[in-house]
Length: 164
Image: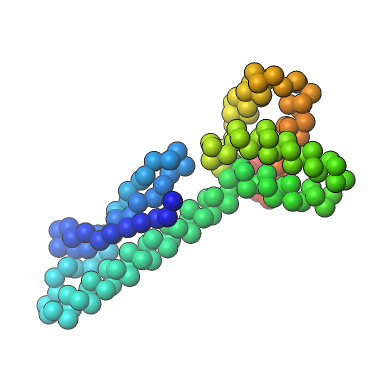
């Protein structure tokens, strides 16, 4: 979701209100005082203050859009995609194709809707994934193959300092 915002007048000052989509899909509203007075000494000053407040709002929206963009880069799904691209250069084609199928058919449908950051994945969530696959009729050996992709992703994330 794109970050949206508006200006409101409160207690003689302009306040910037922005709306941001959180990881759990809810919209969070954030307000911040611009520190700019609504009423100035002249009409020219009033217009200048409104322009400054709008600029403050635009900058705040850009700041939160960049923050949201960085957060999405830290999502588990993005890390798996990057791991797959690295592996493509390191393993035989048929091995890479198997990894890609494990991801596309088994891992992505479970983890993508959760929109988890790489550092938010807990052993409990991984166990829930294993239980889901097992209940869907997958064998322990197949599930272990799927976990190879997940484990490789976590190792890479550790190497890059995204998780400890």
